[in-house]
Image (tube, rainbow, N blue to C red):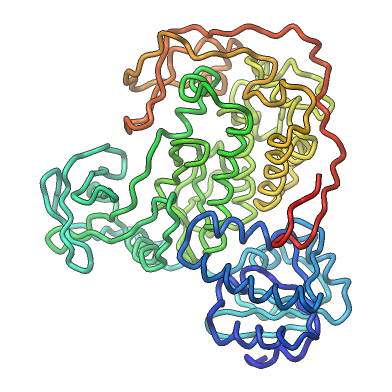
Length: 564
């Protein structure tokens, strides 16, 4: 199939990735001309609007171009009444529905989310497919022919190389390093010293420098950093590599944009940490934080990036509207794998494998994102944290001993501290999705989580829940900021959730003294004495909030709000 072959079909199932990757190119202009004729029907899923929303919220350079192009495209389609939304969220359901339409062709891109999901899972459907890449435009009669002919992306051979690129050089505070373009960067103040390297403030207040310890720069790491810099991710709250750094001509690290706040793992470290950090927060602030994170993950997925090592310590929280992703140099980009992972956030089928030896899929990432969704909604708790359970968290995960039930029964295994009420007051949709993942092993896509959490926020801000407890961070609990909380540094601590998870503690108050804050003093989370300012609400705990059966609709999503 050649560039001008859009004339072959009168209906297209349009994947957002095609527009995102090819807007402004000859391929897109030919498609636009085909649509402009007024006799071409376009079908999109709800994902289309949601993904565009993620793009625009990241303030990427391309988002303005995309928005203009979409207004032009959909202005024509709406005028001719040729745009149709399929009322689905997620790849599988969209493909199932559009494949029922006679004469339709799926238009997608080789590195887009939709194509990756259908290819990795080998989803079968009888519909022509047009796959666009930077090298070619390929047409296939159906999914079977597509999977037989599209070559699987192989892991880079650099992943197997173990030699190091760094020589006998050492740089520290006061030294001047150079970028690839010979720009000088002064390492002015050391912020932190970690296992891989040191973080420095520089003479540019907008950026910091990461300088690796000797024996950390492998060919894989340096090739990945080079590719990341070339990719040029410019989302304002993703601390992406900006420039490679050299000292005396030797690779030593990179610069990245400065993030603000304290790590999520310190803030979401139980009720005391949350209330001391943000005493005025409501449940909508927790939900806003989660939306902020999900938008960034989906944005990266649209850029052919899989985070891989998702965990609470890899994000800085400044406010519910401002959350920064950090430690981005380990991401999987293209065929360069993510070499690290955290077992408690990793699907069990990957346990024991060498992370550098394979490429993760979006389905692997779905599990990690589900873990993050639960952990944020439950203020740092792990979904398999239990009381009166197994000896180790590992056993709970392997046996899928999820202590929460859809009918709110069996609360004796849920950790104390009000987590049973958080579960009780969550919307039915989110509870069902969490139960699917952690009790039944059924996966949900990142876009499905994003859609469900957006609906949750919509219900909160429009006050659709009758019970006022629904709007509290900890429903039916009365946690307060402790009056004697003082900002002191605590090192080598075990946090609230660590006590529950690893020590099997049944008393959630035991670890109150152990909350701490990140080394970034711009976002202190106060440490307090070992007690909670709390009391249990004695109201009838069987009263459920009115979740309703809310079938909201509306006009095409770019041009209308949902109805109540």
